[in-house]
Length: 100
Figure (cartoon, rainbow, N blue to C red):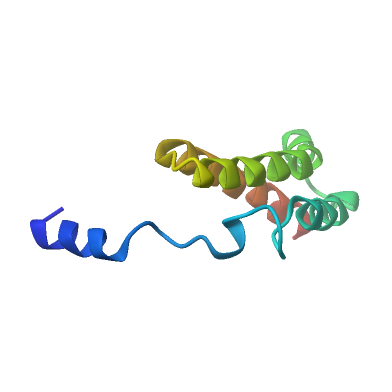
C-alpha cells in the first residue's frame, strides 16, 4: 500500500459489517439455519456423493462460521475473521450448488 492508501484506510476505520456485526438481526444463526435447512432438504438430481455430503453439512457449517464471524469481529481478530468469512462463503457455495 502507498502512504496515501494507508492514511485513507486509517481515516475510514475498520470495515462495517452491517448485519454480521452481531448475532441478532436478519443474519442471525437461527434465520440462517432455517434457510439453510430448507435448501438442503431437497437436493436436486445429479449431485455426486461429495456434493451431497457438503450440502448435508452446510447448515451446520454456515451457522458455525456465522458465530465465528461475530466473535472475531467483537474481539478484533482480523485473521480469524478472514478465516470465518472464508468458511461462510464455502458453506454458502455448497448450498447454492445444491439448490441449482
